[in-house]
Length: 201
Image 1 (cartoon, rainbow, N blue to C red):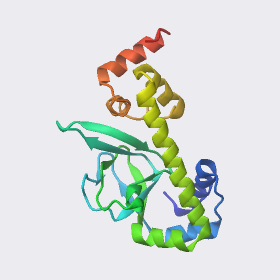
Image 2 (cartoon, rainbow, N blue to C red):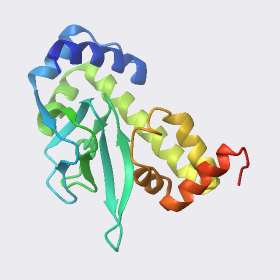
Image 3 (cartoon, rainbow, N blue to C red):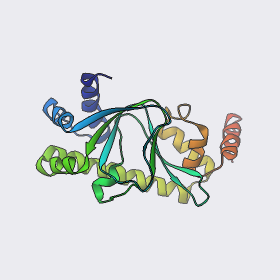
Image 4 (cartoon, helix red, strand yellow):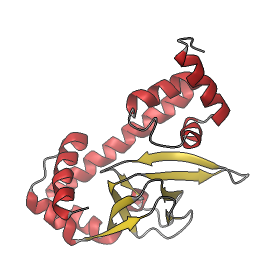
């Protein structure tokens, strides 16, 4: 994936998702402190409890974050699509990862050293605004997730997932979606069959 293509999409993504307008100099500054790496589908980018030294930005492909429950089953925490951050808990003080990250598609990732990125954020007002906007975006997502589990049944959670991430419904494994929603794969299949017949739980 060419750098110029990534730079152009970064400019668009900052405006679309965070309502922050960056300029070409800002993007070039980000590139000067980053490394671009490629991961094949199925590669683990970071394991649970490993040292957090980098923040990742998905430039192409998709990354899944997940926990392990007490019996070793994977529980999907989130899907990180193009131009979304991941491993960003290192920016708020975590020294070790609280979940694992794997490429679920062949992916191109920008990696930023946490200390270098935090220094840039402190020194540059525009990046400080970008960081605050990203934090607010993350808090809104967390509140929405908590409300979904507290207030909605499984069918309602799936319908919300379809509304929020329509492009992911057929892009990621159904087992990953089911654990993200807190249900079994069999329950997800049943919900989808029911919805096709326009009969709701």
